[in-house]
Image (cartoon, rainbow, N blue to C red; front, side, top):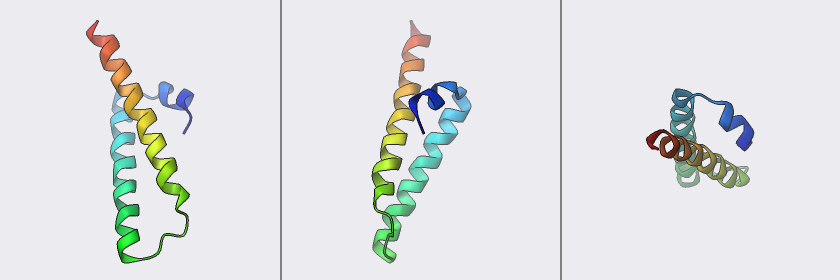
Length: 66
């Protein structure tokens, strides 16, 4: 997910996307314990996407408080 795509999301969609990405990261960590993860690059991809979403959420909350 690109930063431009994140900026187009509504506030409720951003919250849902953050929850989805956190859940996916949890599932990937669980897979490393129970079974072999085929694509380990997914960890980095999902962490970066989560960071983009949280950064946009933070920027919007700072903008709204001003």
